[in-house]
Length: 592
Image (cartoon, helix red, strand yellow):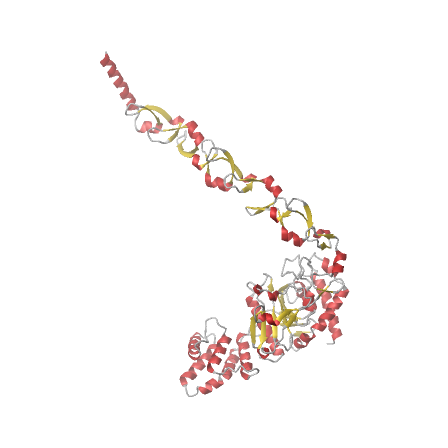
């Protein structure tokens, strides 16, 4: 395909991508600003810049010229062919077998070791194979170690590993490792240098179908400064995009519904491959290691096959002493350089044939202003276009917005009304759960999971007199504290320290509550006030008893006492009163 035809195809792809990107979102301001100048320059610059990668990728049988992409799927992949694994293992270890031809025990160990790799489903063969490997190469086998690496260690121990660049061993071992770790894909993996796919690398914000893999590179968002990274990647010579989509049969989803994506970078013939952060519908990185490893393996295989080199790579972290030396950010690149952050799990891979002469990759370059097509190194617009499009400014950061609806009414720490952009809103303000107005983070109170502004705090909340915490007025209770004073407490303190007096109905502190017998003879809990005004202590049983159930009596010693009716009847206090009358009558007779 001639370059002019490639450029025309790129323009058509970009226009279609912009249309698809806006199909399900109401956030259209940036999309409506995209100009012909921008599209034409991006198509031309990207087409020329990616020509080296295009020439390499187009050798593949799964190259799609109209998409400017490889599509790797089940027809390109397969599960391991263990007959081939067995054949390759015998070829690689042929010299070791020849040396053991007169040693039957050692020959049996080598054969058992080979069977370990070629017959993975036979339990007996696996056990025998492990024992054989341990005897032939004591340090080779470890639980959890990749089988291809176990085989490599076995080869070293048997003296057949020739690490000379381009050796027959390297070629055969690369084939063995590829076959052993191969996997048939049940999905389509797009490997693209198409500028339309770079432009839409993150899905649209405010998608009516629901959020799905959005980021600071979302094309229709201006809240971050990294948006120009999409065109910065598209215009460099080494970056390509690897991604999956929600529905590969629906071409629209390639531009607005990606489900995983990673930026890779490779310069044909150089042997250095960068794998940047994995993004997926869950945010990526955490829990994405398996997919990330699979994508890396597929890309390494494809590139090695296209360059007719053994698929043998050294893999390093993209930061640190080794990996960081082979990748750097291109001049003017304003995108988010995921590979420089340790927690994003970036990888730098160097193929064995270039371990000594690999050159660093320059990843990213200047992006383009979506309005005029001029080069920029931050955001979506150049300074001139950005100024022209502003209708109002944020009171906090003084950044401009293109629509007054993009400013939000807030109140600062002094209660003064201000208007701020979304970025400042998210950074410095919190919405009150009562009045739904935004206030400065510094003056907000968090109360039982609710965010409360100062005005609502004064209007709707009080401080609990027990725990000194704020609580809704509707959830406060009038009680009598342990000092006899009337106070207000929260529900938790009420439940923990207060009881309802069953005589007067008041909530009273537990220290002022007493067990008693009510007027109808039931066991009750009463407060100190009720105890003092309506209850007495029985001189016989010591219980607090309602005054209606108390009576005067004379005890066995002839003393006046107050006892409850239960004690009076149970212990027959009446006999003492009769005995007392008889004694008085006797004394009177004696006196006469």
